[in-house]
Amino acid sequence: MKKLFVSSILAIPILISCEHSNNISYIDNNPQVVQIGEQASKKLLKTLKGELVKAISKSPYEAIEVCNKKALNLTKKVEEELNHGIKIKRTSFKYRNPSNKPDEYEEEALEKLEELFEEGKNPEYLVQKVKENGKTYYRYYKPLKIQNVCLMCHGDPSKMDKKLLAKIKSLYPEDKATGYKLGDFRGVIRVSIPEELVK
Image (cartoon, rainbow, N blue to C red):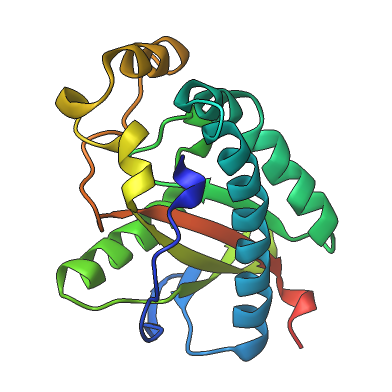
């Protein structure tokens, strides 16, 4: 149910201008990057949320099946619709599906966002400029927070439905995505935008 974690209203954007290495930096506000990133992340959230709402109306077990069998394919479908070399991914330190494990750039972005939330700031997004395989990309990160509906599958395991928890464990033996409380920072949608799309 990671897909439903749209935070109510996140406040101001927090962007950090500092060099990290030859391969990564954090950039100031670039309206085109923000527009592309926001539109792409909203499109993915709308797509995934639609499937989950339909599944949950039947049973929470149906929702787990959507996460397990459809989420990655739906993400790929949205990516193909976006076209122009834009890549999209959901990721978190506490991932459920190993395919959503963060890479080194995503790990750094997640750490920065965690720090900002712990400081009481509410970043609406974070933007990196990175070099990958000789090409430059902007990476737009949209933070996701835990809402009530998320707790059914991502809350305190001792309070979760035992059959549902067993189903999750059977599908994801190395699951890391439980133990959250309402309002916790859950992870991000990462939108990778080729530099040539940004004028």
